[in-house]
Image 1 (cartoon, rainbow, N blue to C red):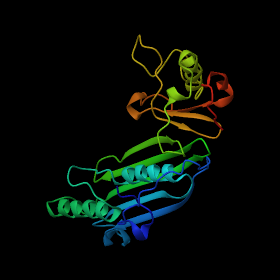
Image 2 (cartoon, rainbow, N blue to C red):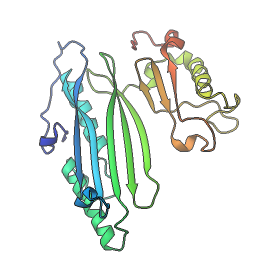
Image 3 (cartoon, one colour):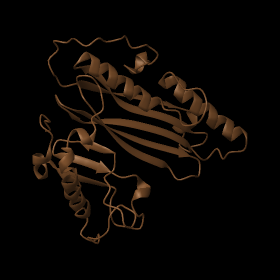
Image 4 (cartoon, rainbow, N blue to C red):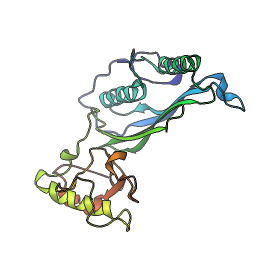
Amino acid sequence: MMVIRTIAALCVVLPVFVADPAEAPAKIAWAMQKFDKHLPGCEAKSVRNCASVQFVYPELTAGPSKGRAEISSAIHDMLLTPIEKGKEPDNAEEFAAQILAHYQMWVKQGGDPQLSWTVERKIDVDLSSANSFSIRLLERVEHGKTRPAKNTVYFNFRPEDGTLIQLSELIRPERMAEFKEIARKHFHNKDEKVPPGEDVKAPGQEFSLPKNFAIERDGLRFRYEEDQVDPHSVRTPEFVVPYSDFRGLLQRGVNLP
C-alpha cells in the first residue's frame, strides 16, 4: 500500500516493515508535513478560477516498526479518501489533479468562476505515549455556494502494532453502565443552560455515547456527529471525561496518561 512519507516522495511505495519481537514499547515520533496545490487564480488579489487542496499531516519518524507502518498507511488513506466517485488516487498529486480538473470542467460548463473550491485535511497528534498514538482528522470541503462541510474524527492507535483501541477494551464490561452515567453528567455540565433531563437520544432510550473518542492527556474526549446534537441548543458536540473520575473502572492492565 502506498504511504505518504514526505512531500518530495509522495509517489514512493512504502517498504514492508517487520516488527522485531524483542522491540521494547516506545513512543512514536513524527514531523509535520504540508502539501499545497492550487490553481493560479487563488494567488490573484481578486480571486477568480480558484480551487485548492491542502494537506497537513504527521510523517512518522521513529517508534515500533510495525506500528509505524500501519499508522502511516492509515494516515495515507485518510488523506486520499476520494471526495467523489471515480478512480481512487494513489498519491497527493493525483488527488489534487482530480479536484482541480473537476473544478475547471465545472466552470467550463457554466459554474461561477468567482466561487472557489477548497479541500482541506489536517491531521494533528493529540497524544503520543507508549500506550496510545491518538490523532485528530479535521476536514473542510467547500464547493461553490454550498455551506462548507466540516468533519472531525478521532483515531487511537496502539504504537506497537497500529491497531485501533476500542472503548470496550478500556472499561470493564460490568462497569460500562457506571461509566456512561459519569459521561452523561460531564456532557450536561458542558453548559449550565442545558436542562438536566435532556440527552443525546430518542425518547425512551438510554444515554448513548458516541463512537468517536480521543485518548488525551487528561481524559477521554467524546464527539457527536453534528446532526446528533440539536442545532438550536447551546450544547456543544464534544465533552471530556477526566481520568480521575473513572480510573477504578478500567480493565486490568490498561494504562492511560
